[in-house]
Image (cartoon, rainbow, N blue to C red; front, side, top):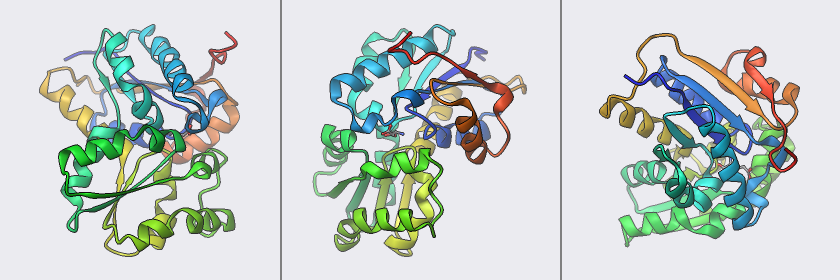
Length: 271
Ligand code: DGL
């Protein structure tokens, strides 16, 4: 039993897809979530900038006495996980490995698609890990620079013409390649699962990287006696961006009103 909180960060709202899964699996946990919305999208930043922003996010969470850091962001995991692991006094989890494991289990034809941000695809972390685990695998990676910002702006309904246009721009290459499994390598993308699923067709399995990593973290905590079973789970949310917008969209993802648990903090680069 370890009553210290779990620290989770993302560039914005995407990591809440992981928080939702974690709250379901581990209802007793105290979760502290940081969405660095002022600096979103991380996916359009350089590797060095992503490392720097991720360090600041981690430092903020560590200052609150967390027992683990959960990087609920594909971009930060792809670019900064090993730096964070080196520098952290507590274990650091990312989303890449758990998503890769689930994709390897799911694929039947050995063709796996990856949808992620530009900086994640450029880093090659998902792709390299997939190929290392199974050298015969055919991996088709596609950067989707518009997707995360659209979700952050609340645009994800499958009939919205902007959503349909973006899907038609990004998905044909994966459909033509005949992939049977698609990793949603950015934690914002599960909100677009309806449109992606409809476009890719029945039988194509979508892997939510955030939810996969939440399951992996829950197992780790249980196996290491680090879970919090006191039954009084609670959540605290922090954002560097607009609180009203964050609370509004977060409630769609967490499925309850979080405004009383949300605090605005200074963007780290201005603090
Ligand atoms: N949610 C982040 C990820 O998983 C990306 C969004 C962004 O570009 O900031 O990659």
